[in-house]
Length: 60
Length: 90
Image 1 (tube, rainbow over the protein chains, first blue to last red):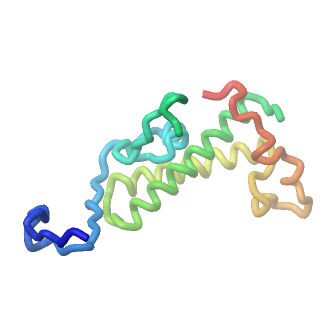
Image 2 (cartoon, each protein chain N blue to C red):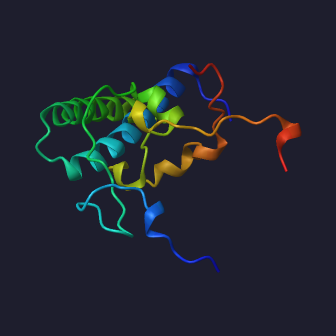
Image 3 (cartoon, rainbow over the protein chains, first blue to last red):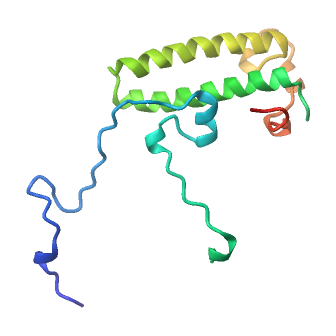
């Protein structure tokens, strides 16, 4: 196994500890109208992030 | 099952408001003093109450707890999976 190389670690600064995950604090902005929200599965446009539709030939 | 268009639109609006209120609920749990979503939640809540009242007066109880009298009336309504939601929908 390749030895761990500290030099390739991304430099994020001392505030960021290894193996910790971060969730940015959400700020309230625009929201979808209720009917639209129900179809999209969220009221928050910034959380609406569907997978791109694949053509049939690209699927496994 | 086909239900009339007016009824379907009312039901859809109720479902959409309930869904949006769940999402607002989740947001407000972590941002309990955020004024704008609080205001929207209150507006939706008010509107939902009105729409449910309107729906139930015209068509029957949405849930068993809303069937006020001793008759078990809500089973007379179509089940959610029996409704053709595409029919004349937005």
